[in-house]
Amino acid sequence: MGADASQRTIRCLVAKVGLDGHDRGAHVIARAFRDAGFEVVYSGLHRAPEEIVEAAIQEDVDVLGISILSGAHNTLVPEVIKGLEEYEAMDDIVVVVGGVIPDDDAEYLKEQGVAEVFGPGTSIQSTIEFIRESVPER
Amino acid sequence: MTTTPVSLIDELIAGDQRALALAISAIEDRKPGYRELVGRLHHETTDAHVIGVTGSPGSGKSTLVNRLAEFYRSRDETVGIIAIDPSSPFTGGAVLGDRIRMSAAVGDDGIFVRSMSARGSLGGLSTATADAVKAMDAAGKDRIIIETVGAGQNEIDVVKTADSVLVLVPPQSGDAVQMLKAGILEIADIFVVNKADLDGADRTVKELLDLIEHDPIDQEANGWSTSIVETVATDGTGVDDLGSTIDTHSAYLETSNQGIERDRKRYAEEVNTIVREELAILLEREIDRQGGIDELAEAIRIRETDPYTVAESLVDPLRVSLGDDVD
Image (cartoon, rainbow over all chains, first blue to last red; front, side):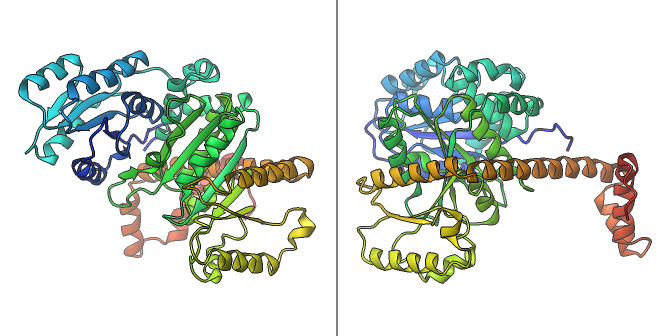
């Protein structure tokens, strides 16, 4: 390793947004990400979109994983993305969504800037691989 | 984004959150150019008051830090928080969970919370933390709180560089002797008996008093005797008390020469650590040039050479170029 070789570690924010108390999935993902060697910041439950944005900016994460099971994804996720755009941070952050998202909604979220939507049955390994491939070089 | 770290400096000083966040990433990742950035940042710092908070897992550090942040915000002071969690020695991964308990930060750009993992080795954490403190200081934060689990030497090295060190001791945390073992008494400026509403808090306070009284170092003579404050971080009881005790300590540092003394010690430690890190990197590359550590180890194993000869051949060029001929 050279004197200037950087020690880059992928940083993720695993976030629960809105009125949704189901965090088992978020915990499982957080742990799997940790085991994959990522640094994972977990937001805790019931966060407002602006709290998620603030945390993502301050923690300077490469990946924002939003777990949402309340059905309010079409409202809340675009709000988060809008917040990130205000900080001009969307180029640096890969936003992924996990939860029960109907196909049409998944399409809509991708149009809004979400990189991928992971529904029930997605293997954790494929999620991790997707993130490794998608995180932008900085 | 391919900007050099130092280009962030103007926005950082102006208080831009994202510039501060990117600067801390550059510091953590040892991105090319981070040295120049930190070098410049040092001249922009104003000796913000740094508070170190440590204690065993579950002693209430994050909750208390959150309360302290609220306390300072109510006085219109800005706060930077660095929350350090251990990382896995196997994968390097970490779950940084302190943010969950920090609700004061929400919607208030007077509070900046950054989670860091104890990645890297050889003093990497204390250097990265010290550099991140400089970034927050230069960004205009009045108080900077470093929070870390008091688990290992690495973490203790981190908090002991703070101006005021708080050690959390929840009630019934066992024999006070255990703490002596961990070498924690020496670094504490203030003991915080958190969860003071639980049974056994009085006893813990007594044990701590006893510990302070029997400290072989004459604390009174030094002008500061380790204080004990009781708090209940979950409902905020005792937090004002703690805040004013920290103020008293900070005033003591300013009026005695202890503040300057600590600063000097900290910078000496920083230089030592940086030199060690840089040397280690240089020598690692020299080892690679000489065929790699495995090959050298094998040569030693088959008695072709010995560890001292190998080390000497690595270090000798340095000795020569420094003109150091002392054996």
